[in-house]
Image (cartoon, rainbow, N blue to C red; front, side, top):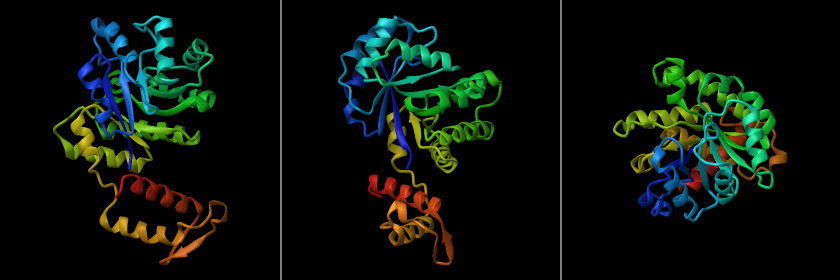
Length: 272
């Protein structure tokens, strides 16, 4: 039930040519870490010749960028303002990019990758909530800076903190990438944990992950049957008429019903 955000390196023409074959909810074309310095200009040219859909984002580094201001403007316009910004630390950096393209309404995915960025998260979201599509944690860079082992146990407190901030401003949270293409049990558990924590999406970096991602069942058979049973009894209740209901000896208030409707909507989108 998480949305898929699939990364594609901007310098790989063979991948860009097959971009429409991917059954991902969102595509992120990457001009940052996955593209070598020697290929930056080639990637820029390839990306600008790629036909862009409404669910495509472009990722580039804002600080110490390898592109000129005019090139950044061209990229942002090509993607109609849908950008992914890594290593963001302060509101001043967002102001800078907004001033660079004043005539474009930005839709930004922010990657928080170091301690100062997480500390400044609330201020950034409060200031630019209308322009932020989602946030995520760049967990590998973050763990490296923190000097901690990269695992769910060490990261969960920081993910919870970012999810809390995101939900406070009605912004989505996207869980970070998993770089182990062989351990699908770990990948599935990571996705389920992200969903349970309140995440809305998951970053993916390999087609085999996307294939496995589509198979994940976030609810047990019993949970799914209970959900369908409750949903069938409350689905026709208008939003402004929701009250407190007792169904099968359990109390359901407005937050419960909204959550049930949301989950059923995601299941129906995926033809459960």
